[in-house]
Length: 254
Image 1 (cartoon, rainbow, N blue to C red):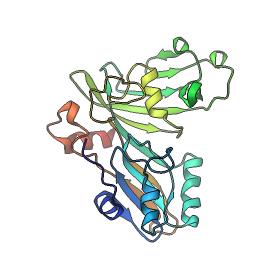
Image 2 (spheres, rainbow, N blue to C red; image 1 turned 135 degrees about the vertical axis):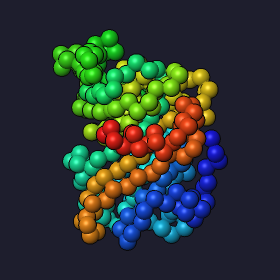
Image 3 (tube, rainbow, N blue to C red; image 1 turned 60 degrees about the horizontal axis):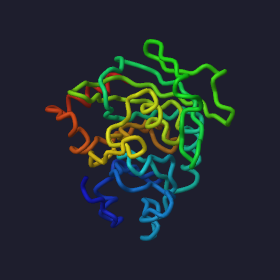
């Protein structure tokens, strides 16, 4: 993995996707937090150290690369975060998973809960997960006796190469670690994910926040369609000859 820059002006310039008077969108490298992950240096803290105040509209994990949207003022922040809360913001991710047996399209409809040591898990025993065709779910009678959070991830298979599959994913809900836990619990963990891959054989986690669509009322037209292409390191495990063609294909699937 490339060394992550921690000088805000350089990071801001290299990662810039879009900017106006109210928002800043970045293509965040893997290895740096958005905000508040224990005592890591994070994007919001780096900006604040230079006098720039940013409010995260959503978060992606430290190990995840890609699109992150930040607001410059609280009015825009409220307008945008409401769309995430109402699940009207359209988010698309790319992932490389171990295994090649997934269907062309699928839906993982598995509630999440928080287990020991604050770890996110499926809110049911693994053996109770039901797989019927292109859908994974659990019966309500099999849910653990703990608070659970309905969680839905839709996916499409982009390509299969060797032992890996490239997926385009749409998390309809936006729970913490949702995509990572959903894929691991159905038997297709994300390559290099430290939550589920303890081998240390991969230089990064192959999950990327790729596209985001929502409404920005202050803009004309108000549609805000953001795209953060993955870096050349992202598709290294599948040795894609034509990255542009692969991403164009992924865009048509969801």
